[in-house]
Image (cartoon, rainbow, N blue to C red; front, side, top):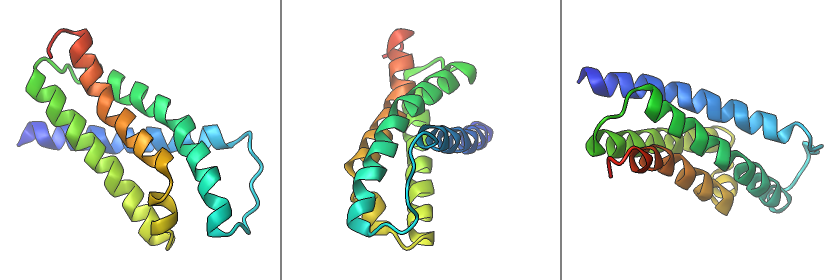
Amino acid sequence: MKIIVKDVLFGLLIIILITAAEFIVTLPFDVSPDLSNAELVPLLNREFLLTAVPAGIITYFFAEFVKTTTKGEAIRRSLLWTAMVVLNYLAMALGNDRLGVIFGAWGLYVLFLFTLLGPLIFARVMKLL
């Protein structure tokens, strides 16, 4: 149980870092706040796609930082951290009444995939898988 709590706490830190990375990748782009849902989807795709690689890198290095030593730990952390990121985006989408817009952007699923792959790639590199 203690290990799961530790992984959840690191998952919260991962969410914060992914959100910060998402903010950083959007800084160069000027976006009007008065966009319709149809105009917002391509911008969200760009944002999510640009954030996907940093998300994968973040979860890769966190898998290393928490000393992932077995295949089971890598899979557990990969699934747990991805589920937490999905729940974070679900909460944001529901809170902003943009569920269809955010989850309609295919770039979000690429971000989820990269988040999932980070610990698994670490495990593969370390020959755990």
